[in-house]
Length: 486
Image 1 (cartoon, rainbow, N blue to C red):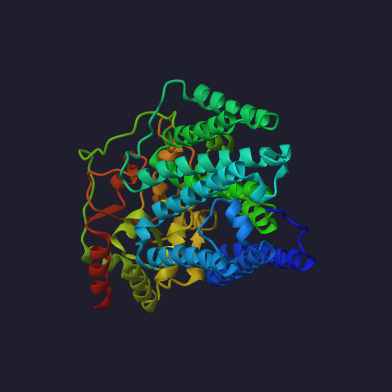
Image 2 (cartoon, rainbow, N blue to C red; image 1 turned 90 degrees about the vertical axis):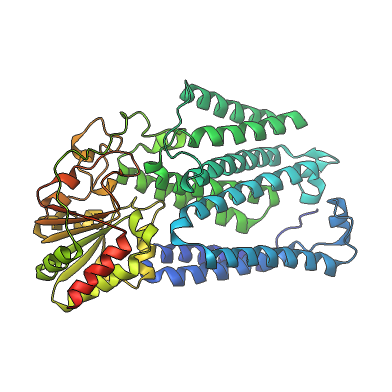
């Protein structure tokens, strides 16, 4: 496909798309503006897709040269493209409508894998038919700079795909969330990455099939190797990092396709994902470099076991309702257990009942609560919890000393004081909520036999001011609400 110079109007359209994508990211930074941000992103993508279809008008000759021998008219070519968009859009629409919030992290991981595989397939299509993509210097000879872009796009896409598949399996519970350690994994990873980079550079001088095939195979392998050593507690960082990889893969393919919109979009996704990963690493006291290398946080000591023999105090919904109703200030800390039981609506009702009694209610959100960045924020927004009542860790942690009640629902690792005291703990160094400073702590969990996602016991269970509420989170909160309503 000959790529003519992009018309000035198309460049302006791509620029407008880029601005809308930036506004989308800005909007998605806050629950209160997330809907507007989504709309900006959708409009920007519509402009980019329409502009690309007009600028790169498919013709019979181009599609025939690509091997699409059943296309006989330009109209049929457009019909096929629109049909593919409709099928993909319908699948996405149905999936988004039916997916449970508890399954959202693995859905995001699955979508990242699709982006990675799309980059691999586009790269291979360009390699097999460079004339159709306008990257041939002569018959069958690909321009060296295009080979570099192609090699990087395929490598990053393959890493994203295999890494996202492993993340999906771990998040979906189809694979153990515990770190899987390979002997000498860091040496293997570094050697594999060096081989990928070396072969990609060599690909610029030799476009033989074995070179690009080896790069692809090694990239699939390293994606797998990078993720299996990572434990379940670190999955939120993995999800954001894979999001960054998918963006860079798209940007690399944008250079191969000479598509400005893909370059802009991929760069925005890649850079924003990297920034989010850095923020998440700070929230977990992890090294950003070790995230990229794989297996971060995996050198810690063995996971602890729940210590049921230690004395602890069990309470009832009636006890909690009375203490909550008498409090002046209550801080609620939600976690993945709330998502599993779908208790967010009952929790918001509890907050409304407490506020009607004159109680000050605030929600404390840890950056890594749940299984993906922003998981708890989305759940609370879904339940129409007022945005001005939701606070991040650094904004509210100092207030636990003045709180009458810390109400923990389904959270665990993010309130575990072992992160501050136990150097052998896999969560040591991770900033956590200072719930031990609250006058009274209510802790909802299903049983005392379980431990958090990091696999360590929690000293909060055994504090003298802690009352354990052992039940399904939604059922417990509903029973508390009945007590508050009387």
